[in-house]
Length: 161
Image (cartoon, rainbow, N blue to C red; front, side, top):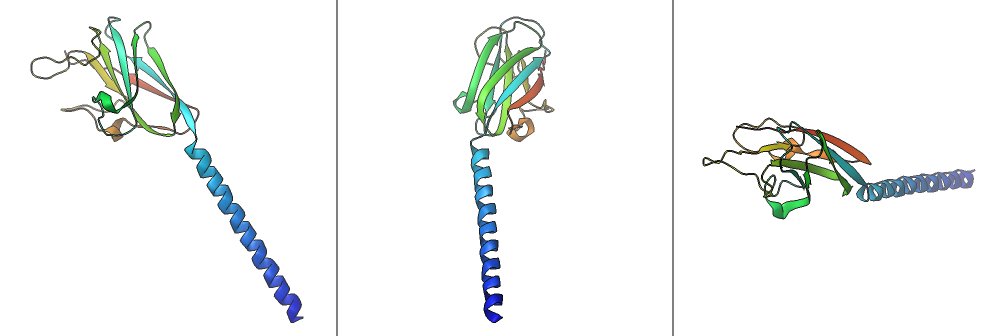
């Protein structure tokens, strides 16, 4: 009788070990799939004062350089304002957090122009439309999570003059 009981315990241990191994492999596979996930980001821009110039959209994947250092931009698009709202797409982005900075580049020079005291004289905006007081928002205040096939954000442009 002891042999049968001992064999049953060994079989039970083996089954538990195989179950744990299967769960572990499934979790590893899920993590690998998540790391390879990619998605698209659609940015809808509203609030243009006019259709002059272009809209320049910069996409950042970290706080480093956000919102105005072009060296840290993951992707950038400058498009003529053909319709309002203007919609731009960023495709095949790795899963993660991204923040968008937009300028209404009325003179087409690709930069946010400022007056003599440093205030923007062109329209600008950020993903998640954070409140802007005395400085540009932090990355985390504008970040959106890309974790599925399609993510949409709406940005309302601001003008100070």
